[in-house]
Image (tube, rainbow over all chains, first blue to last red; front, side):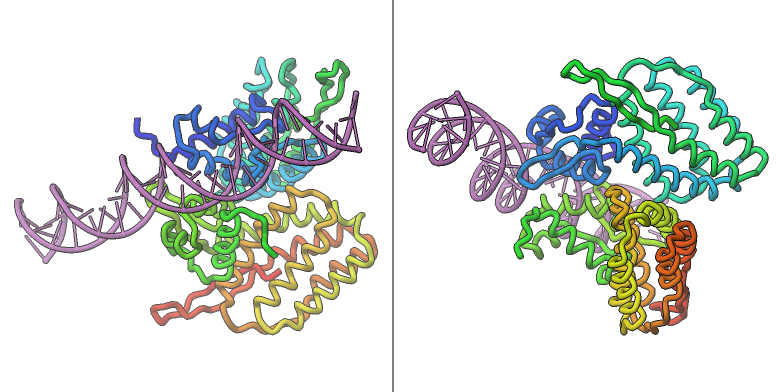
Length: 220
Length: 220
DNA sequence: AAACTCGAAATTATAGATAATTTTCGTTCG
DNA sequence: CGAACGAAAATTATCTATAATTTCGAGTTT
């Protein structure tokens, strides 16, 4: 199997998945020799992977002190929500004129899948697919890459908060966005999308010390 | 001042400066052994620096084929302008309530310096200072980092287009933004800022083959 | 003459080794 | 008993060496 990617990219991808899924907790140390050994690689590609994770905001590196999984708090959840709102609205405005009926149908199907998802992971997958479908046609690669990074952060917030317990509901926002797009009411669709992405859910979490605190995540 | 940063960070910084200033042309190859030799380093920190430049959009890496300075065209200039407009407007809305008279005075001073700048480099420096002054108080580090990267891209577009020949003018937009902020008319200020950042200038450039084509850059 | 093949040179990717720094943990001193 | 110190261990950052891949050109074939 000749992988087309570099070793560093593979390692970065796997570690990113673990961080997003919550398998690697915020604050956890990433020790280069341990990671290298696990992947059967030397530490050089591992260090390159770390630099990538750092740029994506998933890890934090302090010189001579190693790399840790980035921590986050409510203010960063809010920040990512606001950035997503601003950038996704922009993308949608540029994407709208290129949307076809087939794309909108596929987005509706993704919405249905999200509504019937039985766990948070499959809901997130369907939700991301919805957003990607209606935004990709904007043809702005740099913008789409930035949105992708923000979605990854969103997913991390979500998986950390909703480790278990997920009840699906009808996604009125998605349907309203699609209805507006079908009527070519771009501004309306962008406005709903912007509001939709800024909705932050709260869930009580049992902390290690026995008490309960609240966890927050973007639920759009 | 010995920056206690890593070698990789120093190399990335220096290369980024060269790319932004146009000293390294779009498409130019970055050969790790040559760079390593120049900086008196091995190829390991050089490779880490490359990953950083890649994440910032300043370089493009193709596995086994090396790293090149990223190319860009009018559509990317437009894209960066739109992204800056969206994100800087967001930042300003969150920054407005924290702005003090001292900050606004400093921003006005930066505007004056930009108006009297004798070359494009010092104009860009003053312009960036203006934007940074009024946006930094928003206290959203991830947003500010994203804006920083976009400013770097903007500067690159500008320096590539306006390698020479620069005539200063009064910056009415900056003054209008400051006036609105002084009156606490945040929405008005954000609207002007958004329009301001999307202004794209055109300049005829003598190409190598003797003909002239147009170069474009964000002039806000 | 154009296209193709093969091989050498250049370059990138990975591995192994070394030096420098931080962390850890036991011991001593207040 | 707790804080502070210091050697040992672990970890990071860097360098040198080796392996793998691509590029480019000379020579051959159609």
